[in-house]
Image 1 (spheres, one colour):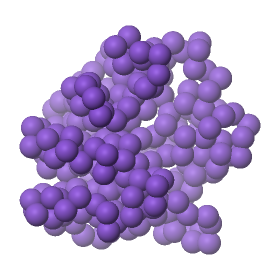
Image 2 (cartoon, helix red, strand yellow; image 1 turned 90 degrees about the vertical axis):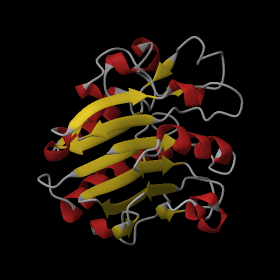
Image 3 (cartoon, one colour; image 1 turned 60 degrees about the vertical axis):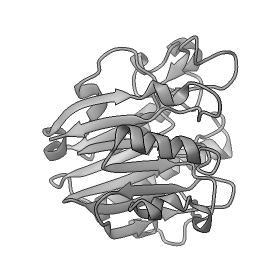
Length: 256
């Protein structure tokens, strides 16, 4: 099984690139984030080419999806099944099963700046994710939590840790909160096979991509039974190059 996660930063703007990526890499399951559209605006080629889709959309902002070559079952939209159904909801999480594995596509809030209301929302959203996992998943099942976590977990995930440690993408309290999610029983599948300074996001500004001034904020985390089957992982930098690219590159992991 080849699993990919990709923040496309507008699926309509990236439709041609998405189609080419699916043809070039031939993944079995793809978790997408930041669709920036309602479900009626999803590309028609997905259904035409046999993809099964579970998604939650939102006009202009957010939006997540799971694409699968196999039928998707047990679809859950959002965090309402975490026991706080009255909480403010954004289109940031979808979960479904395929081929005996539960997949979660998550788009963690950015947080804007430390101390802001959006930062507080990010921290609480991660708490809500923990509650959702406790009620809807078990560490012993094959489970993949994929997406744009908007957090770089370690120094090797940041091109300049000193520059970023006072930001919402790398501040100690944000990394600590993400670690509470990992404690559910997740392994960072990428780090099973890639140990160096490798990034998945580069700002559009200041020549960040050609200078490789990036952060690794897009992740594939798996429970132990699935981690034991992981045979490889990579960041597809090719998809970040050229005109019309998302500011994120796809992350891929292979499982036996």
